[in-house]
Amino acid sequence: MILSTKNIHDTKNLDLLSQKLEIWIITYNRADSLLETLIQLANSPFSFCKITVLDNKSNDSSYSIALKQKKKFNDLNIISNKINIGASANFIRAVELSESTYTWVLCDDDFYDFSNVHDVIQAILEERADLIHMGAHDIQKWHPSGVLMTPKQLLAKDYKYFYFGSFLPCNLFRTETFYSQIVNAYKNAVNMYPHMPMLFDFYLKDKLMYVSNSQIVKAKMSDQSYNFYDWLDAWINTCLLLPSNAAKIAFYDQLLETNHFCLMKNLTLHLAKKKTNIKLIISLFLVTNRLDNLYLCFLIPAAKIYIVLKNNMIKS
Image (cartoon, rainbow, N blue to C red; front, side, top):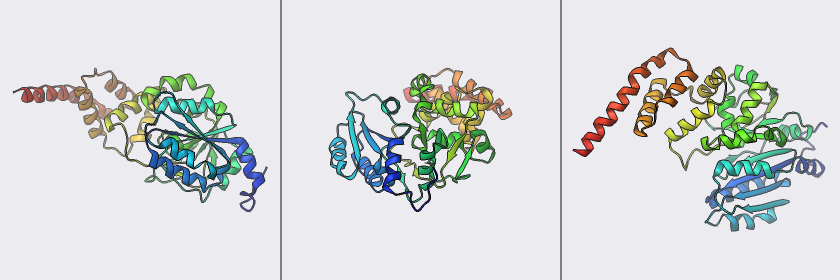
């Protein structure tokens, strides 16, 4: 099936799209952001798809706001969890409940540009790939785009596969593709990246994926419920699911522009403050495999000494 830009919005094609794609919005206590997301979707071709708001036991007006938007969609549903199961588990639940060929799980607070989605709709209707990348952080260059390649081929062209993919709504995927990694997804839920085992599987098996022509979704980097150091722990632990060399690539794909010494200094200080053993920092050394990691021999004891001195000053 080949679609032209002239007929991409025909009712017949949009009906076909609604049969192949199901969209989920995971949300918790961000009613205003949820409303903005629904408004953006309502003015897009994806409004023809089945869309489900998976509310994680919000105690604000999220449910009533979503209910008021139902008339703007062909098939808008709202499911409220009995208890708050956390964002990662809520994402996995969305995948488990999805019944369409493809699934796209959105967060409740990002930005969208639906002005150029013809290629993505065509890729879905033709089932060209099991994974479609749709966008990432606004500050990054979206290149290469409009291509069907493997993750390794994309990385060779400076496409930040792991970094972009770590942004949850970047990934529109064949639903069944996730099933083989669902146990690993649950295991890694504690590290905030339940979807990365699927992306790692694509990388290790060198599977073809499609990158959209333009950046359709852009991350809103604010109002996060975690700090930088907690995120860093989670990303390192997630990378360690890969073989060592691939873990190194994934780690630096996310942090390549960060000053390495400052990164290691802050991490060792963070671990010392938390009274955590050095297992994580040693793991990072093995992951990155850099010669300048030799200064870890000085950073780790220096961080511990600093914490002891600081605590003694507070007590006195």
